[in-house]
Length: 276
Image (cartoon, rainbow, N blue to C red; front, side, top):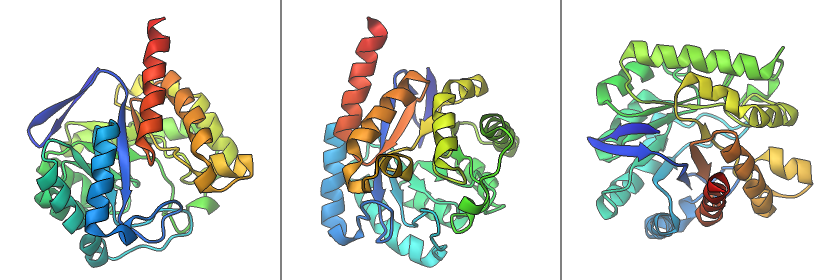
């Protein structure tokens, strides 16, 4: 069991939970939500909560392979109205902000966010770790090499599992040295990895339990699924659910998903399987 202090409230993870993805972008690999408008995004958030999401993750910058960095100003324009509105409408729901820019993290916190989700684990903004420590929020540190624009040219590993493990171990230590109390680790499926490497990480996810931190996995509708199956992201729900069950069996504590209801079904079945 793990506990997280989110804006002074204790979030207990005694069974797997779901983080629902809200993309405040127009260029994500799957379902950018900006076109919905604020009312549409609020409706989507309400549906995710009703379907069982424990956390909502809001990002204003696409991090798909080859994407270009969005300015702080544009990222804030995209996310702040959404965070403010969701925090007002659903004050009990923890909001995560998906950003690697410390200024964005700080302003998102002021608007109501309570978790910082950083794909770079502090490597793209030297102020990030100290900013998070000062804010007192839980921090998601993900493994990635380079940046989203060049990461898929940086996929050479001697042993991908041990190298990702060592990187996350070092980043967890750096977080704790900076003063961050609650650290969540993410092996970064699809970030500076080949499809084969992604499957190897998923198969060996249980090894990361030795780091004694909550493990987040984000595989929802990613290329590892749709390219392997020869389909599109919009057709990748069944494959996503299949890999969610593998992730749960191998120790995932948080599933970061686009489709909350099917992921909740996977968790419910997994829990029954564990009791049998």
